[in-house]
Every structure is written in C-alpha cells, then in structure tokens.
Image (tube, rainbow, N blue to C red; front, side, top):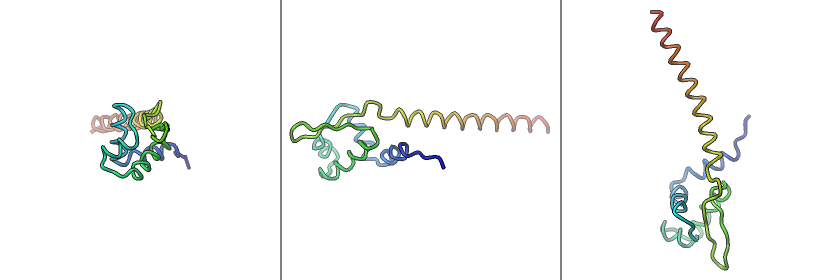
Length: 110
C-alpha cells in the first residue's frame, strides 16, 4: 500500500475551515497566537492546537520571542500538495482524453 503520510497530515490540516482561515490570515503577514485567537474568537488553547497541526504539516512556522509565540507561513507551505494534485490531475485528464477518443471511435463505428 502506498503511504501518503505527509499528504495525509497536510490534507487533514486543510480540512478544517478555521485552519484554512489561519493560513489566509498569515498570508497577510505574521501574527501572534494571541492575535489569531482574538481574530477567530477562540481560546488560546484552541488556537495553539490549530497552529500545532499546521506546524506539523509544515504550513506554519512558529517562533517564540519572550513570552509571545509568533506564527508565519512556512517557506513552501503547499508545494508538495500542489505537485501531488497536479500529478493526479494529469492522470485524470489522460484518462478522460482516452475515454473521449473511445467514444468518438464508437460513434464513428455506428
């Protein structure tokens, strides 16, 4: 069985609308966990859990300065996932092209 552990972690992280919102917010620039928690009307503990999942997926990098933990987008937050999707899209497109050719031949044979 093929293992997609990295992709599984990434897509699980992306499955939650709050985490997608966090990524969208961080796209605008770095933010502290406290700032993110306030923007999403969430407890610090809840926000830390969301950020930890995004960090495990490599989408977010956190840095502690004093007592404050700042978050920013990872260096290549979705490169691996985009490459997988593009590869998968190519496979599906090739299959659809073959189906179209088959249907055209079948129609001509009638």
